[in-house]
Length: 380
Ligand SMILES: Nc1ncnc2c1ncn2[C@@H]1O[C@H](COP(=O)(O)OP(=O)(O)O)[C@@H](O)[C@H]1O
Ligand SMILES: [Mg+2]
Image (cartoon, rainbow, N blue to C red; front, side, top):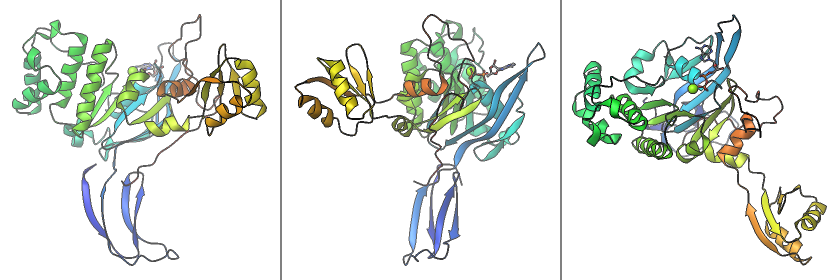
């Protein structure tokens, strides 16, 4: 069955649908469960994984004869229809993962599958359904965008009408007759995406598409990915820039030092880090903080406010302080964003006075207590 295709089947009495790791089977119900007395017709979106990576390992030999562990048993699952953010600091192993998946570098160990086929061995069978930009593609500067795409279309057996469609899709329709050397970086990125879209892929893999783009270019790239998602293309997009990813992705996998440290739907990842914290501003904030702390809640005092955690009902704070004649000026929930989650997990927040170096990420599991949400594919 095609990933993401909708499928209709019926389940017999005393049988059940079992969904595990994105695959489903119909099995007899275990005895002991109450019998169902109706014939159910079930229609659901099969959540077959489009990309599956299990225990991927890669160590590079360095020039000085040393070893550099790029991937240390990395796992990732991307389901059909997701816009999946692949996040991690520089040097954490994102590009190596994507290159291994596409057969551009040989992995030492691990199991990978793309669209249900073993990768990279069986990739040729699904190559026409996958578009990828991992190494920044080199185009002939003297060719126009349109001519570049026509050449690629011819080489790939794609009709030339498709060139006009993808030019339109990436917003280059009116600039297609200009030479590529006159293109901005953002336009070159669009041309690269256009080339990856020629074969109408079901899966698009983009490695750091926002790299080197100005804010306007990033916004355009984001809109483009949104359009693709709306057209049912599964998108895997890697980035070390968080703010942008949070706005476009519905799922994330966070990598640090070659290992997955967290994955799941963005909303669940964020709610998992929600500590029920509120920022409280009040005239005598230190005295107020003492009152709240006295009630047993965790309180951190700052210059002109304090932060209280574990707060189920904010009204309790206003009631308690109001009861002592202290009137609150501000009571704001501190909901986590992806940026703060990412910093907590990968520890790449710049320290004042130092320059953060590549590979300075925190080793997962070491000094950080992680709450990891691993989400299995489920029938919807
Ligand atoms: N060809 C290579 N030879 C040696 N080391 C490499 C090579 N490619 C990547 N690495 C190392 O592997 C680690 C992961 O790199 P990479 O996958 O490019 O990270 P990311 O894409 O997340 O920035 C880094 O420490 C990098 O220096
Ligand atoms: Mg990279």
